[in-house]
Image 1 (cartoon, rainbow, N blue to C red):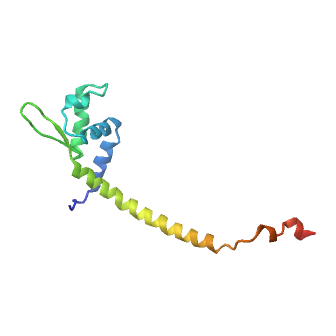
Image 2 (spheres, rainbow, N blue to C red; image 1 turned 120 degrees about the vertical axis):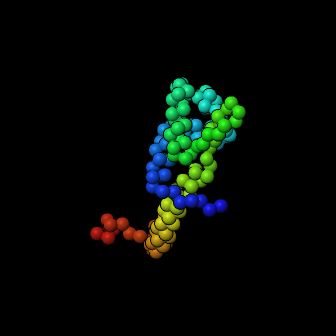
Image 3 (cartoon, rainbow, N blue to C red; image 1 turned 60 degrees about the vertical axis):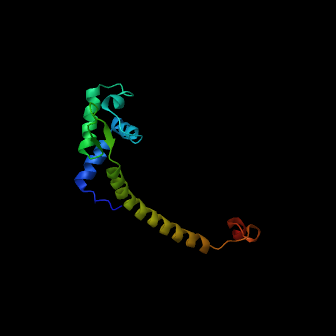
Length: 130
């Protein structure tokens, strides 16, 4: 599946939304399935109105959406948006990992090039001075 590129403004909104621990907890809960505001508010010691505001921030960031199911208004996780953020992060993670692998190779070559000596055949500085 091809993901649409994420704009800088989209990234800013998404990462700002995810900066709050309550919103991250809501995302974690929604990863198990849709839930109502009442269900999402249960574990928190904040008002349902505050939870609704957190959901609005997540909705503006495109991380969640709401639907109507008769009297219920369940909140759903937008997995495609999270996948797009992960793809953006992975791009930089992979580049960094390649650089570290190249550095490891250079360091390994240098370590292998260092001559090893037998401890019994080496002389100390004091022995050389006498």
